[in-house]
Image (cartoon, rainbow, N blue to C red; front, side):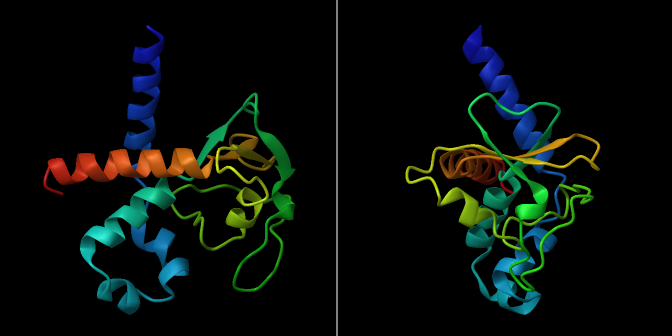
Length: 150
């Protein structure tokens, strides 16, 4: 039963990831649409799966997650901190546009889930999956997409 529930949660996570805009999520990584177009399509697809796996919103802090304020997060391009009034939009929130990776590398094993308080959002917490979980979800979504011929 536990395994079935875990499979269901993973399926919902992948389904939710499909609605996110790959170009908006990856532009901060590639720097331009032209540079993104130069990369092999399979590689861009995997990067898209990876960034879509980064976040989810929650009404509670996951049990083992460390909690931060969203105002601790900075734009990579400008260095500006996000406002405490920041409203999460998962369809355009890019893992690469902000210093989320810097938070993750504070933990040496890649297995730590992090949480950011987002009181102005529909759900009060933005959860950043561990690097390990992001990679696992990305690999599953990528394999599913390629088995289906996407």
